[in-house]
Length: 329
Image 1 (cartoon, rainbow, N blue to C red):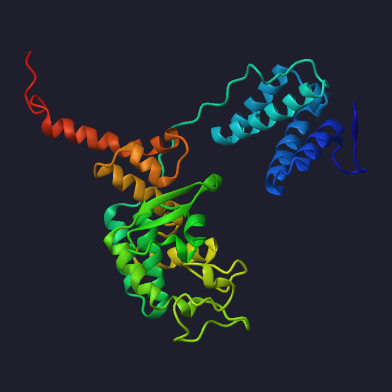
Image 2 (cartoon, rainbow, N blue to C red; image 1 turned 180 degrees about the horizontal axis):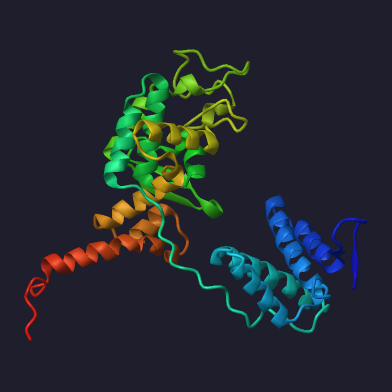
């Protein structure tokens, strides 16, 4: 059994180490490598208990491992991730001619139930906005602008906090958003979002950090820069020069409490889901929604069709000529 390790610690397969080193050499993120490492170490412990090295595991042993994960109560999505890790590992071994076969080639991923995204009702979103409007001063104007913009566009939180001032069109009708894969898309703004942004822009300079660590004095001139935050639509004293995702999430939790909504139900991503669900429920088509959300594949957008089910049922009930007719026997 080819392995190495320190006394008192689990032995580590040389092949597992080689695979992880390959990921690092290819520039994989540290979090990705850590995730693969945990999965492979867990699998290694399973097969070593059966006197096999991970690189020598049979298809039957891989099946037994996946079954053990399911019996331990692991969610299908997590089990599917473990299988994906093993697929990549065994493909590496096959490419390196360590193995003559891939024991995962004929295995199916664990079946995953249809996940319905969490979203708020339209009334709950309005309650959030009402609570935000109760905030006073520049902080309140910024909070309303953030909420209105997020709900009006369905942007990802990273896209929102990373917006430069130049992303806002001169007529305030739309934003140019830089999404995944450095792809730009134009997102229209609702009238409430335009109004909220206009009011916020009048006090935006107050959030631009000065070189000394403070904020730009009042009356310094809108968009004048004044530090690393000058280019951002939502500048802040954070290291990146703009509002952080963590701070935005924190603000949403705070305003959720004030709106009498359970804070665990509110997040930037939940507002993105709410935007998509409410648009579909009110007649938007999937293709337009795909473009606004910045999805590369419409299959990703189809997770929101749960709202169409209720709408179509209501349509049939209200519009079908025989919907309320008694059954003839």
